[in-house]
Length: 109
Image (cartoon, rainbow, N blue to C red; front, top):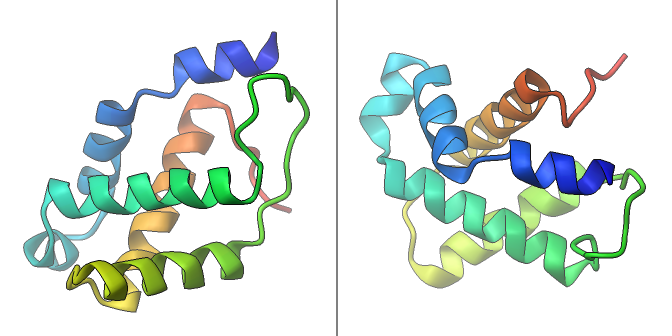
């Protein structure tokens, strides 16, 4: 039941808007909303490749952030998407902050 609530709360369009507005002005000048959507899509691909997206799973999963970051960097290079590692890292942090803001991620101690 909690997962269904989380899925209903997580809005991809709202996440992209949140991330874009969360980034500082200089970072926003270097990317587009399409860039953020691309990273979000690759995040979902990563979750799927690791078996973290499962309709029957209701427990919290632990994400290897470094592994996910490397997966995204490699995918961007392969797909010819020109995003620096710094921008990818900022997008990931913005996505995390969006999740915290809607209550699906908890702040790390």
